[in-house]
Image 1 (tube, rainbow, N blue to C red):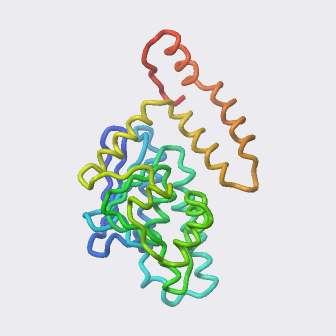
Image 2: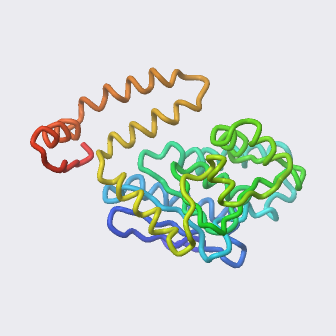
Image 3: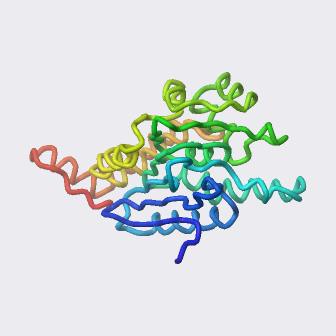
Length: 260
């Protein structure tokens, strides 16, 4: 597919997805969201891809939010459908992705941009990053999972303060709150994301997928996360990777996992 709003490149086992609307601070319009789903689905079904890095074009913004012009004219039902479809096709899709997804946050990550970053499994921020959920200044609230994921990451009190004040927080504050995993200089942002992803890719792919499933279960109220962990733990014993991992450990050699 020829992308109009993304730059997509596969290098080694990493797929790089760059939101490429720099003149609009990489705002997420409907076409960009559609392309993002296509790119992610391609990564998911491409056996050569082990993980994904998502970032924004240029030094000013990761994603500065949704394209607000597209909200004009929506009514209650069309807004409900918009939030439902985008949560399912993009934000929940990323969170439940069976391959690791790392957000490399450069500059502004606001509104839908912060929601996109929070859906990723790991977040790395450059030291110039500014994050926030300013939807209440528009008479809205976050609609792509922001109220839920921010609460899970930073706690109820901080989530309510960030959402209700609409204040932006710095990268250092985001790190202190637990919103991002690491803060680095701008020139080290992608290399830090690559370093972490490469470490993950050295481990058993099916175990990584199982870990994502089990950890995600911790944030769900309709299922027992401990039961999910037990099931995922048990299923690992039926994989070739488990046999290889044990054999390599006992033989004092490096494992050669195949994702089977």
